[in-house]
Image (cartoon, rainbow, N blue to C red; front, side):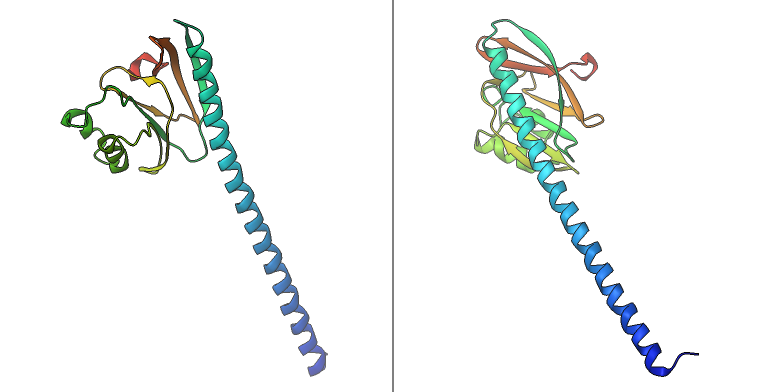
Length: 171
């Protein structure tokens, strides 16, 4: 049988071990979260650079059309491309498509120049400007990420990049 002093020292050892294990788990979780967030940022930048590179390549190849597949940044469910040169902010039919996305409505009405919107969990997470894009009526395209990817046809027409879905059922 253990003496009272021996039992107290065992509890103290147990408590110290528990504190050390808890600290290690917290440090590991924090490190994992930090690396994961940096990976998402890296994916975002990589996506933007690849898209711009592909569009520059298409613009230099007059009349060409290519089917492109992109891995979307983590968490992104939809991408909206808006053709600012053609969309009418006073057209209620077109603007009604953005009822649940007021940041897109505001960007169109205020002509901010931001024309690519990243949507996650029903809200706009980020918006950027992509030069020289054009779409057919209703002058925007929504690409739904399927298994973290989108597919689109990009082509050059009259000095701008035309965008549309690779799968005709979405056009």
